[in-house]
Image 1 (cartoon, helix red, strand yellow):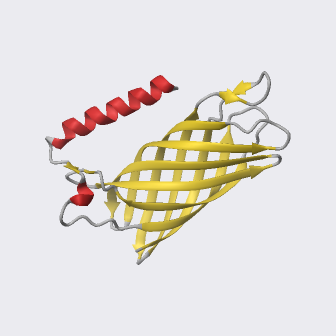
Image 2 (tube, helix red, strand yellow):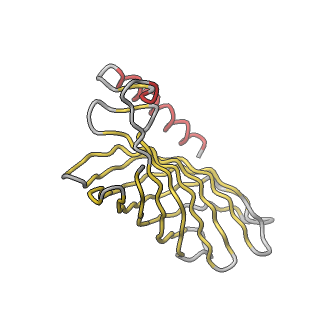
Amino acid sequence: MKKTIATVLTGSILISASALADGWNFLAGSKPGYQADAAVSLLFGRQSPSTTGLDDGNIAGIELSLNCPLLQPPSNRIRQQISYTRYDEGSTQIDSFEINPHYVVEVSPGLELGGGPGFGYITTSTTGGADPSFLAINLGLSAHYTGLGPVFLGAEYRYQFTTEEDFGATVKDNLNNGRFDIKVGYSF
């Protein structure tokens, strides 16, 4: 997992460095004309952990999104999504904190499609067991409809790969999972 994270970070740095020569804007938030276009969303959906003994369950959460202040392409945009979600099924509670930058393209007026990587930190709470925490990397796809004034609707699917941690005296496992959610948001 550490090797995978290092590879993703190295690749991101190399892509960012080569992209600067092609009109990409590094430290976009410090440049004149930058607009954050911030939005807050409520998230509702389903999470499917691949860990033995955990069932598919509902999630709810909140998300803050904005145009990335670090890097913007010459066309389209990168949308930074910072989210917190909670899965609570049976005796297990999973809290996920994630940052998911998506490269977003407007495919028709008001309809945007995007996708990109992400990074996360997951905490768990179980009845009568260990409560491990996990580091994670994500891959996600999203769609947003923004033609409703300041209100928007969205949907996202992402798959998350996690580190492997101790779940007890002899049990080691990961918390890899898929998640589909819908978003109802308000743009400022």
